Length: 209
Image 1 (cartoon, helix red, strand yellow):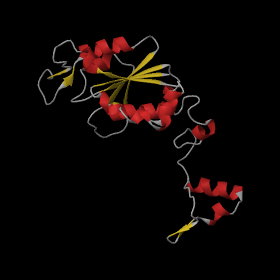
Image 2 (cartoon, rainbow, N blue to C red; image 1 turned 90 degrees about the horizontal axis):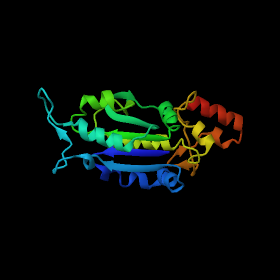
Image 3 (cartoon, rainbow, N blue to C red; image 1 turned 45 degrees about the vertical axis):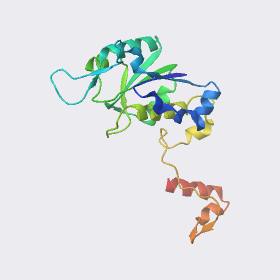
Image 4 (cartoon, rainbow, N blue to C red; image 1 turned 90 degrees about the vertical axis):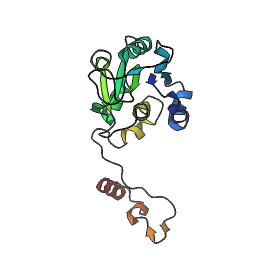
């Protein structure tokens, strides 16, 4: 899979994609993640990609022209183009699994007061949000979606681990887990987990998940 991310602040992605599971996935060539600076598609000497909204109002709006050029250059017939915005459908585990089956995803991170509406109407396939709250921009949502999608690619996680994860269809949230020491500060591990009775342990886990 290839994931391209279009952003005004590409330096924000230094670090999160270079550790843990995402680094392993990249090192194994399971996924190719590329970060692009939207300003590279600006056609003015100041690399400006935003302007004041027609009709007045606060803030600046990302212009359609540089976004059109960037999206066109980074896309092919198989690219699924996703706009990251608080107006989008809330991202969930089921959608992460569906997106993991795509060959190429382009994530478009917004900033300021949003996008020229023509981007939303004519240039994308889908609009997603990671929750009903306001963030400074779309970079963190892009990281969240990338992480959630990549863990479902073949060879990244054990299949059993994926199926038992929280929010999988028909599943529930994880049960409480404990490890050594058996007693700490007067806080003890439930006896059933020490019993060796696997049917009772499984029953307890279901009841407490």
